[in-house]
Image 1 (tube, rainbow, N blue to C red):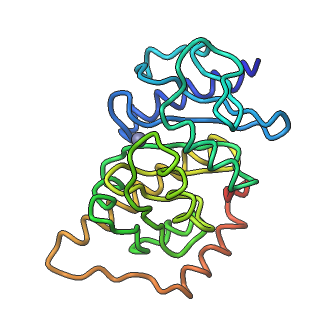
Image 2 (image 1 turned 120 degrees about the horizontal axis):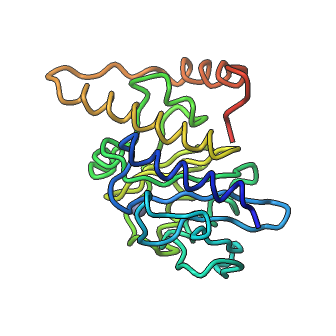
Image 3 (image 1 turned 135 degrees about the vertical axis):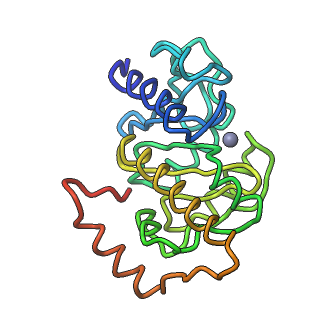
Length: 218
Ligand SMILES: [Zn+2]
């Protein structure tokens, strides 16, 4: 089942490491099939370069394993919550990328210091309140903070991004890390960063809808 999707998850897992969006076995990736209401998710505790397509776990959104003999990622509930609350989401990428995590430790959202924040479909990417990893409380806090956003910071933990494909969710995760780094570095100077207005950001959100070859918003 889902041979192509499993290979895609393995390949993007390796990219998470080579693009320095996560380290070790932290973070996880999933793809959702809305017809069968099943998600494919990376396994728990296996290095991204050691993960094989057959290690990818197929689950329903209630946490039952449908196929695979590996333990699913401990954040499978967080991924399932994304698909339950965002009907257009087809993939989810969760990372512990450095600058998103730094802002999350400060309880600080990713403010629009850079216009690319609009790629999440909002004027400012929120930060969900802290909850223990791998719990339904964390999944619920993420959904609640997210609202219309396609990305959210998890306090003292990391970041989650969704998209209409794995390529788009991954691109958003990388874009949010860039925006978080720019904002953090600007905060480290003795000047106050200029934040783009909500009006300007709404303009950019509209512009992004027609940008490139395909629409990226989930
Ligand atoms: Zn995590």
